[in-house]
Figure (cartoon, rainbow, N blue to C red):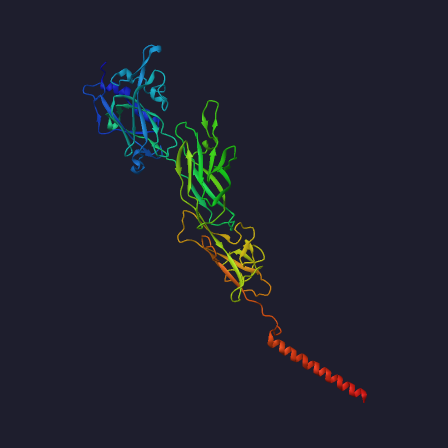
Length: 509
């Protein structure tokens, strides 16, 4: 049936715009606008649909979009819409023919086809078997040609893009009717759907450190943005993973969302397998079969904060990163950055006397303190020692409560967004608090600077020498000494004998 172009425009007016508007998607015409309506002679039988896919806020205007935010590899599926025809038992889905006035009826309005977006057609409307699939290249998925009609558009695959929630499904008509200055029929429709791309997690480490000896703990803070969902989507999966350096071991963690502390084994679980620590948030299935994660669903746009505590078990080169971590929502995974580092070094002490060759001294006690002021005090403080050790029979200081007793692992620095340049160092104060008997104390040149990394086997950070203490003169020994002692003895005997003789003569007289 032939109808006037003007009458058809009244039916079509705003229909295409309504379909896109319900999905929050902007649409523009191209130079292919024409005054020839779909019912007029020489009207095009075909048109096209170009989808420019952007990362951005769904509320952004087209003119505010940045070409740098175009996404490649996002797949769209376009299905032609039809009407059910025939008896219920043998109905077929016949494509909507927009050259017919009656086929425009029922598209818009509160109960029209477009009002069902983003759901599939319902009622007398249906999806035909005519399906087109394209992925974005250069940010655009181009469907050309498309027969004049109504199409249902779905984002069916995010490609390699971290898209948690696809754009809402939407309808588009080819042609669409433009109003105002651009009045006319648009057979080449261009749309600009936008996705909010999932932000990756970040990690930080405090610059200060409470535990200063290897075996102590280091705390890392992981911040994970919770993405916003489109439509009535839910969180079906959510997790955070951290692959720990081999020198670190998981100790504990605390998880908060929006300032509220979550409950382990209720809101989430923690697993540590093969050096990978994973926090998996607990999904809940409602009575109608909808899967969601309630601890995160109401916190969209806020953050998950994980306070991760690890123990430092060994040093190696002293440079320990925590770099391999990621977050996953609805099976979309994005890696984290930056990489924080913790730096550790070692202190080893050899104790000798000043003889040639030097003799190793046993029983010397040492204490180590953190340098908290501009310089080390001249004497060891009464409290606050972070480590105590005693020299063994080989003169090597063995540190109390240390796994590798002859070396003391010490913290050097924590750095965010590492590695640090130049390599950091840290000063400590070292004191000999007990001196082996028969020896004199020697002042240690404080502070002692610790560099990252292990002390090489057989070498020492410090060699502390105690001179022997000067004592009283000892009697001579050897042949010369024996002769002198013998002569002295004989002289005493002679003097004694003379005294006896004189005493006897006096007595006889």
